[in-house]
Amino acid sequence: MADPHDGPGEERRIAVGELLLVAALGALGVFVLVGAGSIRVPGSTNTVGPRFFPYLVGALVVTVALALAVQVLRGRSAPPEQGEDVATGTSTDWRTVALVIAGFAAHALLIDVIGWPLAAAALFVVVALALGARRPVRTVASGLVLAVVVWLVFVLALRVALPGGPLDWVVFGG
Image 1 (spheres, rainbow, N blue to C red):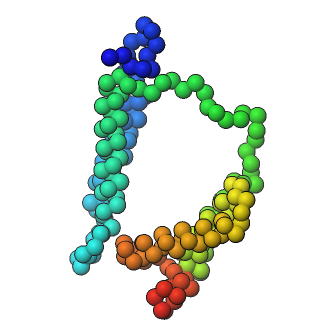
Image 2: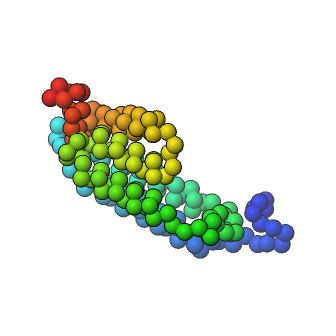
Image 3: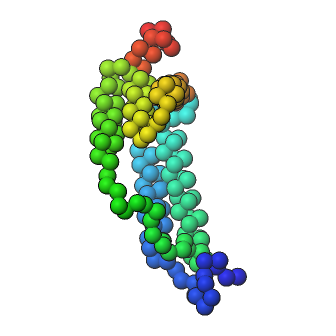
């Protein structure tokens, strides 16, 4: 059965670049799996521990690498890139870049001051507005809801201590 990417008279060939990508992806997955084994786990942990997600991510990365290797070795490589869909005549929007960098810096500086949820919401709002969000009220509401939900998942379900700032008092009473 011919590869749909092959034209008339084209032979299948093993794409060396794609095999290098497979090797790098597989090595990354193995690195994550080995590194996850060195994470310290408290002796009294009876919930999902800190090793769960690194093991899950590592296993998924290795699985994707193996599936991609099978496809490449079968000769089903991606078609050659014809070019990127970018406007080459435009310049970098340095204002947007500066706002995103400032948002990340502010986030890092504000975590201990106002807590992770509010700092993450502020980061979300700054980046969204810098990238062109047109509804500031919806953007602020979305950022707050997402940040609080993520914070609650980490704090309550995963038992990861993230500073809550004023929300510690609201949620936990102090």
